[in-house]
Image (cartoon, rainbow, N blue to C red; front, side):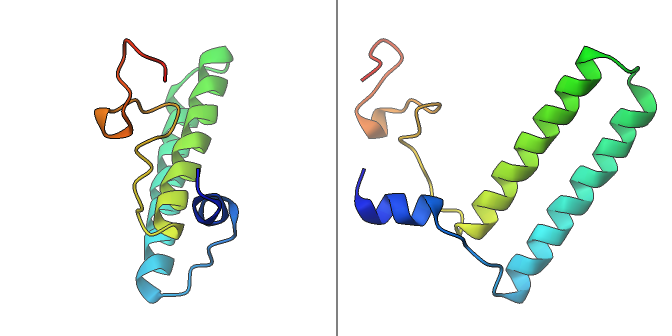
Length: 92
């Protein structure tokens, strides 16, 4: 990975435009609403805890996408694509 890509991936990306601020607030509001639905309709237990953990991950990744400007990370270890020279039969 190029140093510039590492910097872009791990440095702070403030919401400095009205559109980005609105996008963060909208996504956060949607996650909050869904969290309340989960809390209301899913019985307490391991599955409910996992649902909240998954929602935390969704919110983090959505906000990260907004903050990073939607820049594609096609070579993420979790996303194997031919664009990266990888396929499912080859872990690279």
